[in-house]
Image (cartoon, rainbow, N blue to C red; front, side):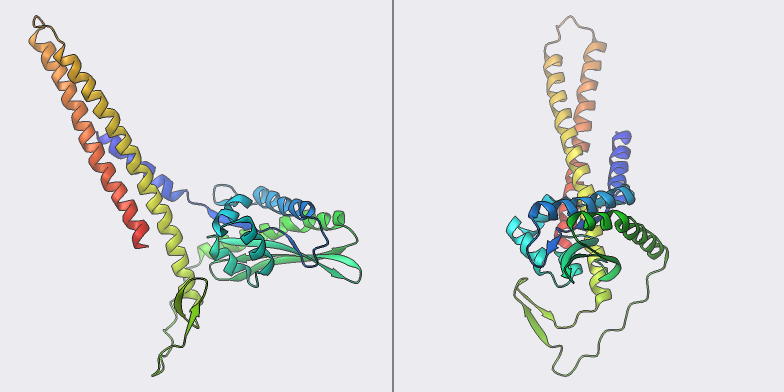
Length: 291
């Protein structure tokens, strides 16, 4: 039973320790709607492919287009958000991404232009960008192939350096006037929010929420595994009861004792697994609700 508990705790910590930072490469948009959806999708896929090759998979996960659509509610909603987003970092918060990038096609002096930006969602910092122009789409693809690798390499360097630096001290709270902070109603979110939000506090809350999700998920996975193991042991105890009852009267005492010990072992494993599994599940649900 100690082995079972050890393995369960190991899985919980392993799940927590292997959390990835999510990279969202949003659909490339064309300001004048003259480029086909197929061509825009191909440029987006190339950006995702380059990011997946540059960034280590042990630390970063590239969000799929479907996962982005699911978080925004529908394909129509995703297309609208991609086109109308005035701040990519805000869009990244809506889809629970850690980093967000997007390409945008425009026109200049009769040529096609492309601009690709990459933001850190937590602090809304622009980590990097590149631009270029060409007479055709093949030229824009060549620009992406040449410049996108360095964009994600620089992001990797910046994020690694940032993780080594200690967190800055919290800023003092803003001075409250006699009338209090002015409030503004956020129509989309449906609650009153201060007109000015401390970006550092907002970033800390975002990181805490993201971290809590993975902790809760680890508890849920371990709890479900323990409960499943308890069900298996319950079935095993039932089968051993049947075998014990079917022993012939001529069976020796030692055989009866051995059969009964196996029943007790199965019941003990069942009870402990179900209790521990329930505790882990309850802890996971509690973390989900609390944070």
